[in-house]
Amino acid sequence: MLKKRIIITLTFFDGILFRTKNFRPDYRYTKNFIDLWSIDELILVDISKKKNPNRFLEIINFFKENCFVPITVGGGINTEEYADKLFRNGCEKILLGSNSIKNQTLLKRLSLKYGSQAILQSINFKKKNNEYYATSNNGKNIIQEDSLKIIKNLIKNGAGEILINNVDNDGGLLGYDIKLIKHISSNINIPLLALGGAGNWEHILELFKKTDVSGACTQNIYHFTEESIKSAKNFLKSFNINVRV
Image (spheres, rainbow, N blue to C red):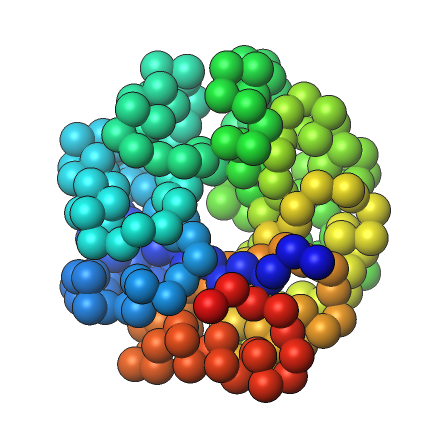
């Protein structure tokens, strides 16, 4: 059985680390901000409105030099040239967003070039009238199409992993949307990552106990706790969750 992964997601706006809840800045990003030695993977996302690739590349290089785990990078990847630059700078994977849901040509090209294992496709969901819908524009626009059909098309066109997030949960620290995650995980056959809502280790335990996700992505919890990833893994192991050490 594959071991479950603990993945940290960090969001940057104009080079500054931001919490996704109300998008507040946090100026503490250093190699001591979080336990970079115990995480399994790291996702870095650039949400800057006016993209400054060189500034974001400096952030990527900072983490590449201070932790030794696979790094996935996303945010505004809408050309093959930009993706090439990210891979040349040491990224193991790229994170594609709603642009590739609407137009999957870039997804196809990058998957053929680098392999599907290098493509993580993120999908933001919102709940409306008791149904889940994929969204675009950071959760502002609902895509009126069957969500599973969208995901299966993304997989067909080259996505090697799927990351899902309920934007209503994001930053709330009240737990993952287990119902949504179970629905998706039971209908796809590639690794699924879950983001949005983790506020304590019990939430991660619930995620692994009740769903078949490959990894728990966590974000805002690390702006509020000094506890290490190692303590989270020890907690999960005490409940027989097969995590990496």
